[in-house]
Picture 1 (cartoon, helix red, strand yellow):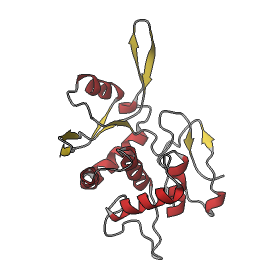
Picture 2 (cartoon, helix red, strand yellow):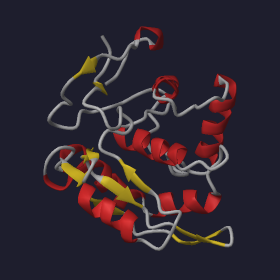
Picture 3 (cartoon, helix red, strand yellow):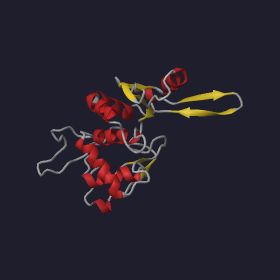
Picture 4 (tube, one colour):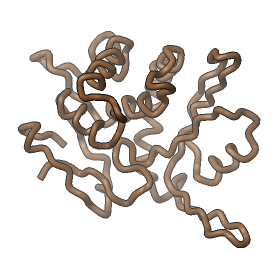
Length: 208
């Protein structure tokens, strides 16, 4: 998923994701463009979004202090896992920022989360991600599919008191945790298609 020129990089829609996780290597500008197209920039201006991504980089998201992903020429390349980590951090924003303690947790469990990202892609419609339908009398069924991510976050008095270990959950397990859980602010995210189009059979598959 490498594009030659950023301006010529355009998404194409497909009803099916590639069976195997494709190799992705995007330049910084391409990665920002993709995240913006997918709505992660919110209402922020392009300049503001760039600055926020820059601030995440300084805090170690999505690369560690050794600049993993840097090429010989010094340019940074974003892999699928790097994009997923950025998408996760951006999804967890509260009032447009992510608490530093949450970012520390993401970095601490980075390798574990990488495994969950890959599994979410591989089992987006099968295995742990197999679809289910929740039914109630007099109501249309609610269909759920894909692998859900439970970071096991627990805040108390405005402070993070627990993070992880992250778990990959089936739709049924995610619904059960949500229904039975005693923690109101529990992050359960469907990560089947992030940073692709979550909850849809369409996805971004590369340049035309």
